[in-house]
Amino acid sequence: MRVCVVGGGGREHGLAVALGRTADVVVTPGNPGIPGSVATPPEEIDADLFVVGPEQPLVDGLADRLRATGRLVFGPGADGAQVEGSKGYMKELAADADLPTARFGSFDDLDAAVAFLETLPGLYVVKTDGLAAGKGVLVTESLAEAIDDVRAKLSGDAFGAAGRRVVIEEGLTGPEASVFLVCDGERAVALPPAQDYKRVGDGDTGPNTGGMGAWSPFAAEPPDLAGVAVDRFALPTLAALRARGIDYRGVLYAGLMLTPEGPKLIEYNIRFGDPDSQVVLLRLTSDLAALLASAASGDLTGADPVTVDPDPAVLVVAAAEGYPSSPRTGDVIEGLDAARAVEGVEVLCAGVGLDDQGRLVTAGGRVLDVVGRGPDIAAARDRAYAALAEISWPGRHHRTDIAR
Ligand code: AMP
Ligand code: GLY
Image 1 (cartoon, rainbow, N blue to C red):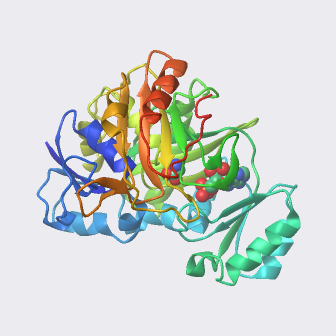
Image 2 (cartoon, rainbow, N blue to C red):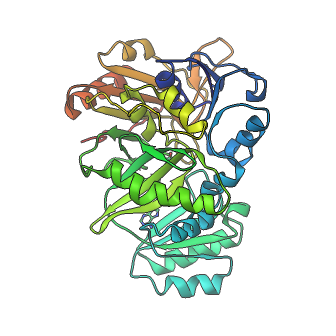
């Protein structure tokens, strides 16, 4: 099978490695660190299966355009992509499907928003309705700060059009989990859960990022989380989507909060998580290309069960100076070969480019994903950090407490 992966970050590198075990893989546009990268647009590529990585092309209807020309695509159409493209849509869907989730309201008017905030018990969450690259969420114990944030978002000053409608939620507490649900429109298969580290600094301090590290399995993982994610979240969600006329074939990424009352949905994304899916994808031993092709064809009934290597995977992101606020680009990356020579280690390329001398340089905030695997968490973590110590560029930073 020939598979075309669309996208060009660490997630797509992880997908390419996992799919490449059983398929020929081409990645568009990819990046200079992902083997098989081509500049050809997806519409002009000949492949048996298209796997779309990021949310934006899905929101923009790439899956619809490819399907219209008879291609087999893993990824929802623009209709299903609203699940991530609008937080308000996602919350209404969650209500229709009766999913356990935080109490919420959706507002474009300041007074109504403030009145709702005043009814919440003391942990306030304010989100932009539209896509804000993972940066549009405030979680605070201060009502005054929440109100200021609503005002800034609604005014359009903070996030432009994405913020002119806000979703306000009751704050939930507990460890978070990421579960990737491979969906065929009606049925779902869960991949093993993972957990990511969203704050930039050790001990979960500093601003939110797209993710600074991940591990699978993770310490707080309840034994049947994958089963609960299918039965209590994915299946009712797919039914609610079908009731809206949406045939959702792609991944539903459930961001769950493991609260004292059980898992609750924080959000759905319509794509694999980055970097949380990389630790899952690298552990898979079953045929990912066949699984995603079955889902894309609308029939997971005959798919082989998902199997994984029991060895844990620990991923540490090496970030550029200034990430997340203003990452510096163009720094030469050294030590990649030495890092890759560490036993049990894979290094995935996320935000990388080439300079005019053909050297690999930083080209984004999250530059490399260093993944260690080993017989236990400690071994996997030690390998990841040993490999990371081989890599350098000016201003590189990372968290030192991943999987600790
Ligand atoms: P989101 O963009 O919806 O994934 O939110 C980003 C992060 O904000 C999540 O990973 C959580 O850490 C936090 N968050 C979002 N919603 C809530 C909530 N209702 N309660 C507590 N934390 C939340
Ligand atoms: N790692 C979080 C995300 O992909 O949204």
